[in-house]
Amino acid sequence: MSRVVGIDLGTTNSCVAIIDGDATTVIANSEGARTTPSVVGFAASGERMVGQAARRQAVTNAENTVFAVKRLMGRKYDDAEVQRHILTCPYEVVAAANGDAHVMVRGRAYSPPEISAIVLGKMRQTAEDWLGEPIGEAVITVPAYFDDAQRQATKDAGKIAGLDVLRIINEPTAAALAYGREAETAERIAVYDLGGGTFDVSVLELADGVFRVRSTAGDTFLGGEDFDNAIVEWLMSEFARQQRGLDLRGDRLALQRLKEAAERAKIELSNAYVTEINLPFLAATPDGPVHLQLPFERAQLETLVEPLLQRTFDPCRRALADAGMQAADVDIVILVGGQTRMPRVHQLVAELFGREASRRVNPDEVVAVGAAIQAGVLTGEVEEVLLLDVTPLSLGVETAGGVSTKLIPRNTTVPARATEVFSTTIDNQPFVNVHVLQGERELALDNKSLAHFELTGIPPAPRGVPRIEVAFDIDADGLLTVSARDLGTGREQRVTVTPTSGLSGEDIERLVAESIENAEGDQARRRLVEARNKAEGLLYSAERALADFGGVLPAEARAALEGDLIDCRRAIDSGDLAEVEGAVIRLEASAQQIGEALYASAQDGAG
Image (cartoon, rainbow, N blue to C red):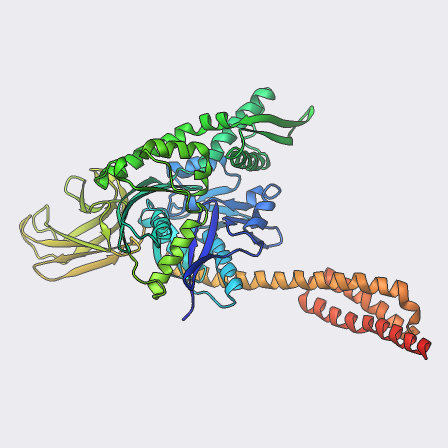
């Protein structure tokens, strides 16, 4: 049986872990880091870079480097959150034919699941390199407050990456699993998860190996990216003040440099009280280049981001209320997500819950560890652990007058099933239209539309007489199936809810095939780079050997070596893998003759 990994697919960074015997191991990538930037860069040559390699070239290739794409998952281009994202990102976001938000890179539109699949492919490769065996299955985490469309987009990304996603698990729940696996006493846990792009808070009860989520709340567009953007806005205003109104908003290169400087300063101020932002040659004017250099204090940062931190208060209070608890009832508070390293976050959490947060877990890795534990539960490697999660948002249908009627309230334990009987609203109505909704508002138009379908063939009857049973089934991933059945005739219509946006089955199959082709192309480019590196090293050493010891060779052998050197240079320039490999073999053979001639000469001298 192949191994199953746990993957934290983050807005800023991603992480992969696996159950290894009794322990959980976070796997380091090829650069030696235990987390990988969720960044994808597209070079003019067609090469795709992922992680740190993509981040390194972002300043010089800003419009072709995609980051924070998780914020676009399952979203429409016209969404207010997407429009806010567009204001501060250097790459182009466009509307797809179905209205989804896609990113445009080098003339091609990519859906967010496609970009996420490239990151997942990197995490899969990281695990395969470490384990030395193929990986085909995974548990992937999502923010607890992700809706149905966003969860489905995440599963689609896994499929495109060649992974069978056994389970989608909420990030705060995964963190609690990692924290509480070895717990020996019953505890009430609050997980405060402030990551790169989303905020979640979950309240759980842990007893005898059972993790029961009591409630969850959050904001799917609040995280470290917004903190960075607040700093960038301040830097742009300071720059404009210093440079007589010079506006940097249209300069993608400058925006990328500002963003990197903002993130770097934010991180430094978690351990220092003051830092300096220094960006030489940030812009050009008719009078010459202009620079940005100014001190930045922790107090300034806290003032800038305090409105963002205040936005976490209401979800925390709502989660406690939905769980039927007061802050004093919570035994442990766990901090998750890189943004929680900020000292002001620690202060705020202490104010909210009346206690200091636990520091037992690594906020950057704990979610992947929890996902790996859930993978172990599914494969039987981890026993005596039961996870009971909840659906974050209410699910219902539109009824007469445009009212939203809830069938499954928020914070219902999943899997779950609910049924309700409805009827027709006009005489002799031959069909009913079932409009599936997700959200907490009273009117249908204020909630998220998940699907429409019709139940036809209803026999003529006065209004109110037919009895139509609508059933909702929500699985452990939080994904929904809806059915409608005429209790009089037995006629039934059932649909697995797939978002009106998103990728079709045909889209996913095509993208899976493309990902395989791209993986093969990436491997071919890698082999070519390695072969050229080997050829250049051999070329250098052979030329040195010829210059230093060429006199020991017969004229014919020397001419052959010189010819092979020329052929090797030509092969390197050609970019043809077979040609390079062939040239290396020939040059190795002819260069070896120098060593043989030197050895023979030494033997003759000794004789």
